Length: 226
Image (cartoon, rainbow, N blue to C red; front, side):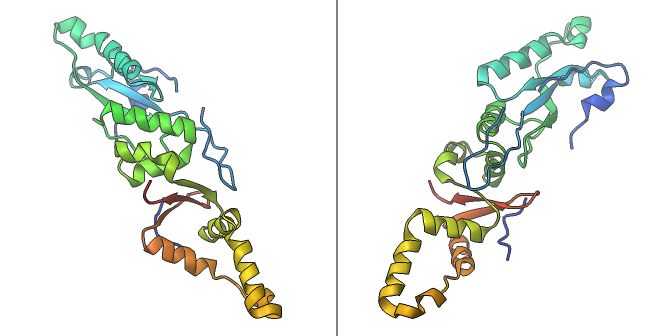
């Protein structure tokens, strides 16, 4: 992802081959736009016990991250409660890490990321799709900005210019300009063109909008302020 205007953690599945345990489990709808992104993501994290890891044992499991905070925390406590090292030595398994993750799009949770933040981003991705992940990455998963996604998301388009043209149509500005041109220049009106590329570039450079580029092509456009 790039916001330029156009013209690793341990892999538990690999370690599990050595005889340690790992499990697997992991619906999303993208925000509305002229081009719907049909990709569906299922954000999941693999939580591992650090007590066991530090003793040469990979103990943990996958969990669905797009749930309420208490359910995620409860699953983490359950994983730690099954710690083989704790059962053998009597030590208490209290520390955990995110050893792996999947379907978080452009946002990447850190190994010791606050689970409240992880769950909030995961829920947003589950509801809105990859655009939410890009928004979270842009703002470092700031909770206030995550909550403002719906107010700021303007849609997914083939290009910044496509968004500009769509905005002119949806707001009625295109029709008003055509009428004004007809009144002022008459027969010359059909030959007058709006430089939407320059206009959208000015909007971007002035900070009115953010433009995030999709790896697969196209852009997501956001209003900068809610």
